[in-house]
Length: 585
Image (cartoon, rainbow, N blue to C red; front, side, top):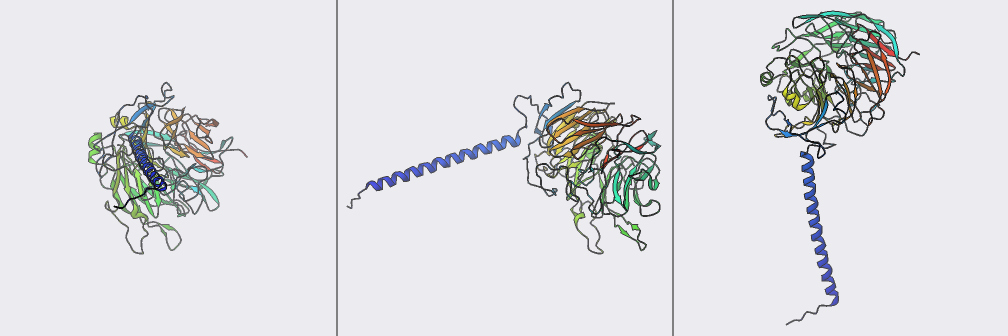
């Protein structure tokens, strides 16, 4: 038998090997425990309510529509509701609801066309970028909220000590709605003018309650073209063609949405959509929606409860005059029978303006049905003679969520693909249990469409009543990490758009329907008593101090949205006049 001699070196080597194996086992165990802890933390964070323990969480049902026709899905998730500090006793009726948590920087979906970074969107806006003006061939604020994501507000400098530089008017007209005739004066909701550079002058174009679209010189307030007269009041916001075609797009309460040429001696109507002649009208026949023009397609909703996409076929004739030959490529019903049954009403008109982001377009209606359509077919360049894609199969519905109440505010999108929806009560229908559950200011993730998922990231409840109504009519403004929202009940809110926390809130006038704008670190908004307010938002973490206030002599509501352009602020009032505010040189 062979005898094996174990030397001291062999013994030492074996001890080292045993120690090494022991260390490896402990490291493996620690790694396993770390993975378990991370998984637990992920689950708790992903399904948690986002509120600190002890805040009195209460269960709230939220749900997402599945498929293309359902307005309220099966299933729910538990969320936590907490009163925002300062809201109790402040009389503003504001509280917050945290929904399913979403990673701070989720993977960008197809609907995202920008890269998120700190400080975006700030004060520098590049034409053609996500937060910049939609128009790239000429300067201007050409549409309601400046671009397709509804996030561009104009160009500075902002006046430091403004006064009235000129006013245009008076303007008024009578209008009948649902059998009741009233006199309307000046301009109102949404009423943002277009301000743009053309042929060496700065033009100001807006529709008013005197049945007319006016074309003014920004320097003097004088007419550049004769006014275009229609058959009823103009309530929405005029749109200038972003591709430099001499065209204006605007809807009217005379049942027509129009395309108007401005390269003639007088503005000339080239085309209209007549709500009374289009098939299957469900509700009204007005056109408040402000169109988006992109790649020769128009996206617009009507109070007839339909959403349309048109191929414009813009061009020029042999004399050099602009031409259009539009065709409807999509007539999308903005309602479902399920929605009508839930509401017990046919009031499902589209009064807000579409929000177009990449290959998605979003809109809602008076019944609170938020929808998203895949419009990637409009991004494809057509070969000569090729016909555009048509019909619902070419533009399928890919997102649907029922918020429960009237959505007049335009949906706003951020660079990460989230959308922000604001709604208000409808006094004809009364309170909506669904809206009380969901909230009035809502951040949605339209990527959340799977079984058991909810798109609600967070929501803020706005419950204070004024004149029998509550909620939000104004379109919110995005600035850096903040969302600025005025409420009908009388508050101006600064909300952290990542978390939904109401960082600050100011008492404000009731019936605050004008949409806030932010230019050069200055938040600008008009109130119901004729005062234009400017706040310093250079530090977004604090309640912004007032910079100045300017009151129109009449004290009438500044309900329209202001347009800021190179030292001037342009907006109409309910006193019958349109104003330019600025510093006196």
